[in-house]
Length: 375
Length: 263
Image (cartoon, rainbow over all chains, first blue to last red; front, side, top):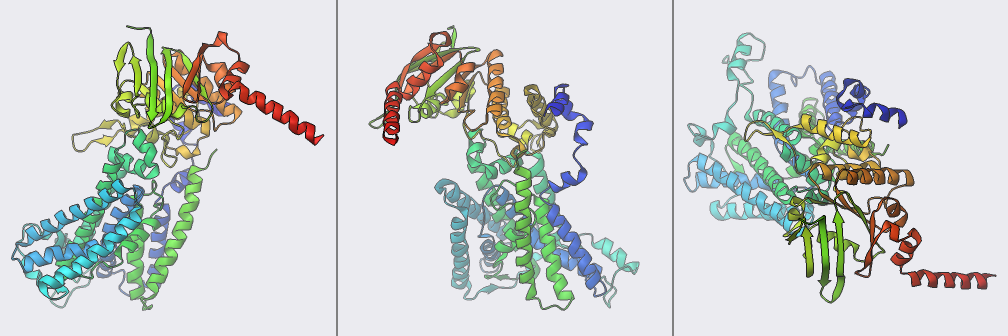
């Protein structure tokens, strides 16, 4: 202590580089929650690069495919990660996806609403569901695990019952024709950078169809949303006051309340975020498939939580990162497509998912001890 | 304007039939440290919460800088410059020193709607403030969990002072600390008082209170047994008042009896 504290008494010694340089870059990196997921993603890429390098998985078309799968999961995983850092769970994500799907399809097909109005309607319902989830958790003080488990059943049941009541079946097709000329739908249904892929095709750098158009037509909307949300969430978490409040609410609810953090408002906001992210997921899928299915999104909440955990979020809250969850989603997306390309039975994917999560939790637990250990 | 920064005149608080506080009177000047002593159940917690604006007194009055005040909640007390550092310190161990220091009151920069948490400025202030106490935070972005108990206590106190505390209410600041750590914290408390703060130190440890206090108020079963200046009372007398002298005398007799039987 004595030698160390000497330098402290020279004014502002904290900002001098010589003091910060003592922290090795490796230790700094080890303190980042997303380290494990980043390492895992690199390993998975190397593994499939070797095993499936010549199968077309890493062609432009193949890569867009597994990034599309990763991005869809990533959109909800990032929201789940924010909520987990804030100290809560949302198990109703999957049911919200199914519910949002029919909120778009039924008004558009059966009530003759324009598509854009149906989409806005779905997002409004998401805000209401998220607000209700949050309000119940904050006001009753019950574990969010129980409250949102109840919402999982309520939403899925209501989705099934209402759809069968109104349409007489469990699927609502016929949306594709409505996408054209809609003022909002393009946000969820248009490939971007098409010209770039046409150019790549014309240079014979990527595979072409027999009619000369490229097989990979452009960056799918899911990937654009995924990147946008990853950047936005990371910015909010690390650079804004609201981000500090999220960490504080999840880290120590009472402490945060005592110094004036509006913990209730923060948590309600995060529940709305997961419901809205589910609706973004649902809108992209419904417009891509051209139909809504009442069972869509089943078990997605667990995959989202798994990706967030692999990405370094602690189940107890207060620690984690949005980028980590994004890498977690990329790992799962890559492996699920990789298994398909390598002709391994796709049933094995779930085994991998579980094993991966187990390793991540053990690793995270170790990291937490490292971070909080006393001198 | 009165000499006293804060005065309690015959403050009482009841919960149904239970008398939690009865006719507590105390007053405190700038730069003074008053130690509030009492055994478990003496009413210390109720008094702290009354000071912090959580409870409203049922009888009596609180006077701050000569004006009678009724707190409408903890925020009111904080706005009046009365900062309470509870035993749990309101620190999040997984968060960095800086993020804890400014938790709930983050400095902002940038355009409206795109305002960001000014971490650069926050890091600088947190590092400066901790440096003034002589606490070695190598890097203000290190997690609070890596700090010792005494350092955490100092961080919580330093934060309260930075955000404009005039009266510092400290709830058992040394109870969980070892001898060395406790002395670091006590030194810091004396230093804070010498800079013009009034400090109310709540503790049941006379050995920690006696060296630093200017005056001592003893609570017993919700009542104040009086406020004494340091020169008017000895450490032993305080100790026996706190525990209720008879209690200790009785214990001595009982111990003698046990010893006699054992022999």
